[in-house]
Length: 259
Length: 319
Image (cartoon, rainbow over all chains, first blue to last red; front, side, top):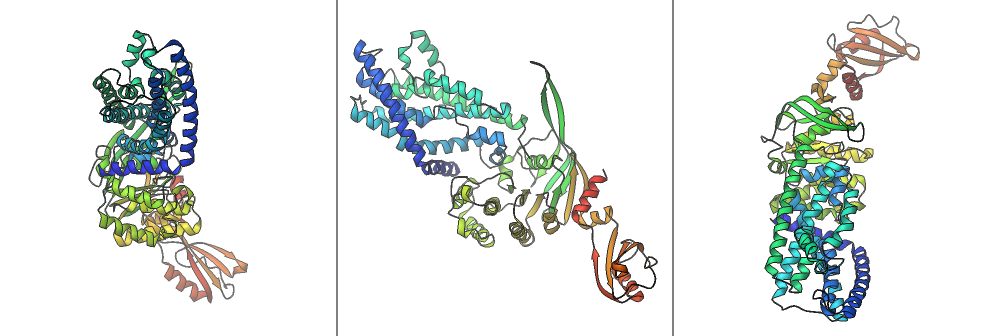
């Protein structure tokens, strides 16, 4: 356990080195937040609240979404995929650790740093500049749990995308499809409640809402937080288990590249 | 320490024939390799590119599951007990880094200490030893990505030794290094092997590594073991002839090819330098020198052994 804690710390340290990149990311993030905010507020103030979203709820939705997308990493990362392609993964595979757990530990460390520079600033900015709907303080710990489950789900999905390189060697096609669809499916583009009932229900039967919409719903106290947390916990566990077996199979069947 | 019997590893290669049709061919990377390495041995494992060296090493470290055969390293089955084995062996891949690219070297060491659960006292002692012998001090605080190849390699070797492995597996550790860095690394590894008794398995294309470090040589080609034995014995086997080169004060009165044990003679410098080939089975260098000295005044002499490259080349040619 200590080893994984140390790896998490290393993940935090590694990402804190690239401060410039973090701040550039933050700046882009805020600009997009302002654009999304303008569009959504224009809609809800012209037509009145849509699906329960008024200006204050919309501010929470937009700024929390902007913060969460970098915290959970909503786009497919290629760290492991790159190592599979070059064959460097051989080094990761002979360590006395479980590779999936080790990568998750590093990702938790990265996410810890992202809380400080990517999650808190946009939310604080949104809360300062716009009417902002704060929840009952007892909800905040539930939101924290939900955010961690969102991270675990996103990690599990990214791990599977990365693991696909063991077979595909080149997963960029898969990644670009993922990167286009995910913002819509997880509730970043528009709140999932804006969709017709059948589409919303269909989406909630997939893991995607667990990554963005779920923690936002917990924060906004929409519906029972327990149902939302259960959905997230289920998908995080199911996808992690799937990743576990995929890695097992990869190690049995697959060529490790290069001499 | 290492016990391999009849190891076989195949890969499936798929080739496109049409839009949907695929032809699958089996490629045999390792084809019935036997290898036994006792504790405390240093073994050189050589072979041309694609001979199956790295595949063998990946099987030995538990990264690849063998298709067939019996494999035990440190008494455990690598594929099944990969994690347990990892704590007991050290591995260095010359072409891959096991250090954290963007962290200072010292932090990689600390991380590995946690990953391998090394007791604090052992860690401090081993680390201090490596820092001193490999002169890591000046760049311990430098991020790994900024290190030169020679510096990084010294870091890699240290990283593989922090948990005090019983077996050290080195896959081309001197690749790309300059002469001085190579020499420094060899010195360190030789010291490690002799003073601490660490078992070493070394693959390399630089046969000087083997000459310096490994009394025993295993040559593999196309997935099979071509030769396995002490370097000197292999040398005697593939090239039974040695050459005595003598510089004489003046050319000999009669040709020297009638001396006992001499197979052939080549004269240079108008007879002042004589190359005498002889079989080690027939005579010794000492007896031959005495015989030459009886015929002419000797100014200087040397005995030439075939270079290790030549030995290996002949082993390949023999298949």
